Image (cartoon, rainbow, N blue to C red; front, side):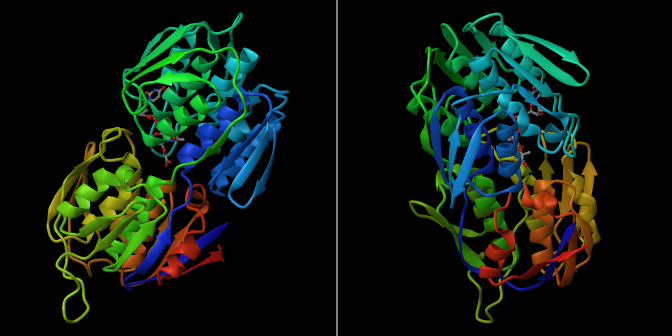
Length: 429
Ligand code: EPU
């Protein structure tokens, strides 16, 4: 195992290019199962999770080749229909093969994901949706065994809570179903929109993109795709917050500013100056950097996580790191997952003043110099990135163990941070 070492207390400056979105790449790779032939996906990030997903595809008989950020996937044959426990336990998004396998093969067997570091995360909405489409789902030996007697049938599916991967799974299943499927209270995340664009380019008929009511008119076959993965709005947000918290100034490039608007609003409320171009967002310190070249501090701002276009749960931990360094008190409320405060105890080890009260965290910002480096433990992907932000802003050295969590979702993290002027490297534990 490897750990990350950071020498904190240095402002970050410069441009950082944003990679393709992990949470768009995974459903788009799964969607290639829907059509026989050779698919080409561009801007696919090379991450632990995309590699795991492509390995799962190999298990199903679907081969691939990577050249730079382009991945060519040959889905001519889908030999197997099973996603094993060994894969699903390392990556819950493996459940995304259920929808396309049911559509193409009428059968799928996927290990039921257990709880994870951020909450119970059941898949009951996915299964209830499939059952509406005529699928029978049985749970046996820890596996969901799903089968349909013939072609799936269109139906009306309502999500109690908008589920991102639930919406994606149902879209893929319904694309080849007989008749019309309506998904109500669907997730509106940009990654869902990326999947809709890909499916429509393959010949599917899906209306209602970017709304919570999606109408899928099933077709009998789909053609292979040639599609581009959108930029990772969570990676973009993480770097904006890292630059801001370090007292620096810079830009995230190759991204879609419209996908980051809730974060941009919150950072502006805190006093930062944010400017957007066609494919970049720049951040500057509140009131500039002063005659001494020093940043002057920022305000505390309350945040509540919500489905898109609300503030993303995947940027909650990182915003908390920024708020620990603010001048004031704020409340950060997590409404999506029930256990997404694992980073709090680690931030406290750096000197942050944070108190958890149910689903809220009360953060008393202690100013820009508040934190001091310490040894820390990564618990999940986004919690770890908040520790990186805090570690870069803290005075002195921090060490973050179990960085495989970070490698699941941040491409070339050390290289990108180093290019911004951070002193950071990996070492064997
Ligand atoms: N939920 C259920 N039953 C279901 C599905 C969801 O109760 O069948 C609940 C969840 O427990 C949660 C809420 O509904 O309380 C919303 O969860 P959602 O289904 O939207 O989450 P997800 O699809 O499993 C995706 C991302 C997550 C991100 C969430 C929320 C992917 C592969 N994962 O998960 O990303 O946090 O949406 O935006 O797209 C990450 O990248 O670090 C990450 C965790």
